[in-house]
Length: 247
Ligand SMILES: CN(C)c1ccccc1CNc1ccc(C(N)=O)cn1
Image (cartoon, rainbow, N blue to C red; front, side):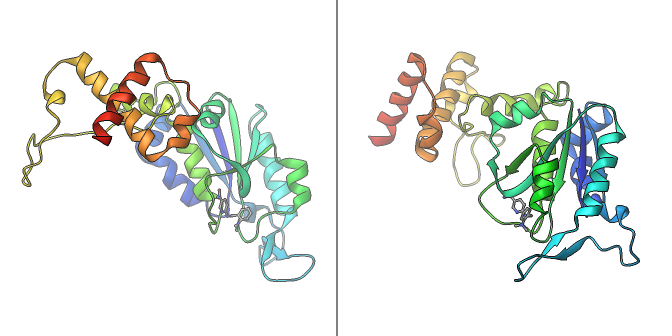
């Protein structure tokens, strides 16, 4: 997958995409991340990339000409057409479902706004999709771009080893993850690891994990649970969790 990012801070994008699973995926050629700075597409001595907003009031808007030229360069950099995504608080909330769909595309172009964003006519002309990573305001779209790069990058076939593929599975079914434990079996405060996890009974462990994931989702994110149709087995596990919880 090829991801081009339009940003005033390319170093931020390169740093975010260079570490961990995504960095490894880049080394393996599973994903290619390129960052483009609209400032390189300015022609004035001050390399201006922002301008005053019509209608007055505070705040500046990103200059349209450098953005248009930068996007044209991005589009022609490789023959594959790109889905152009604008990171903005006005976008559709990003979900794992949308991440899985985006991860299947051959090419993305992520446009990172700064200042008060970009001209609405540019959005109408150049942007295919507006995405928000959450209901909060940031100083730029770069963190949203980094989120998308990580979320789709880790889903590229071959990106996750067996070791980290568990993380891949546990969120795929729309549930929160179960609790995790490692050494020591009993810690300095005397708190022990749930015995089932030491039992070697893999069926019991799988049931325990599923029940904990269902219960935790019920307790913390009932909205996620409401969207799911549970199997008979899952309903039994959740009832079991609720009985214990409410006892
Ligand atoms: C300056 N702002 C507010 C702005 C306005 C319009 C576009 C981009 C920006 C850049 N900031 C962003 C971007 C995304 C998100 C998000 N929730 O995905 C939050 N903030």
